[in-house]
Length: 477
Image 1 (cartoon, helix red, strand yellow):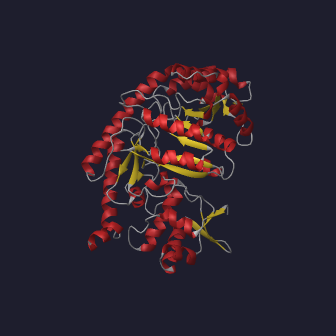
Image 2 (tube, one colour):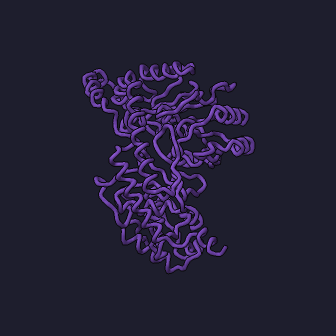
Image 3 (spheres, helix red, strand yellow):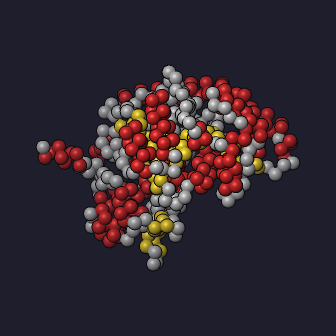
């Protein structure tokens, strides 16, 4: 057993779990979804039946039946003296009724398939591989040629950068973990968007941070009043932002939003981590969008993270950090306790990919445009009551449902062969049961078929849902 979750915390994470009958199975499904999303990690002790029943306002019999259902499906096991503990699960083993991973359309991931020319680059790299085989095979700072080439791209974008300001990492997620372990002490405040990229929140929480959220919506963008107040009141150590094609909303900061948030962060003495992994995924965005932090007095307070994952291929685990040299040295020193470096083979492939980036980005725009348009058309045709946003880039649609049943939908969709992440997966403080993220990185046939499955699942959820709070209120008016 690695950890324990309290009844109060589990109750909060379950949110509006009672969306179907019988109640015990709805509760069991709520826990299954939390396991699927890793919001309850494996080897976590669940609350005692009596404690959870009190926190949820249900009978102990309901909780006992839910735990029995979870044991029957292999999601928990009982340990004498420790109660019920969650089990490690494969992706296909979470729902009571599911399809095999080979048959499912996975909309939990938001990465397109590899750029078609990547196989040729791999072949070219294999011919040059003998030059790196005599070396250790990994590099803690990164290949100097690759770092210089990435620095040159920043220079071309108007941001003077030297190779000493670039560090190569095992993808953007590794970069976030390294920065979190270097810059955060337990109890430090980190300002973060909500909804947000969930693995970023996990990295900061894992380092002991206390998260302070700033809302961002598809329609209104970033809540500038809330951001200004948070910077001024909390004085966060770090802020994590995705200014371009934010995941999951797809929204990009306006020039005014960039200036106001960067200025507030500078006044507070906050280091801002700018996640640029989606920045080049424009489909049809028009207008000028300055680089975040342009014009701040202390550009060293802006740390940038990028990767090849969303452009070339998610399987090419090469990312980078752009920061002042002294911070790069600190991150390098901290890296040995976490990992030994980035493989030279993948760096070699990345170096050979760089000249192809213009055509890679153009191909990505075409693929994402086709996927976005197909998903929007299918959603508007099959689920006209949903609010489908207009996005001009990025990887996903942050859809408004017409009832707070996102978690129930994610579970029901599995029986239709569609794997979804529920809205609360992207939350910092809870909520988003009225939202679902639908990536459009797949093929047009898969996306069309997936929306059909989602529509069928939604019909089942709505027809079998327990009375919702607003339904009961409406009935009394």
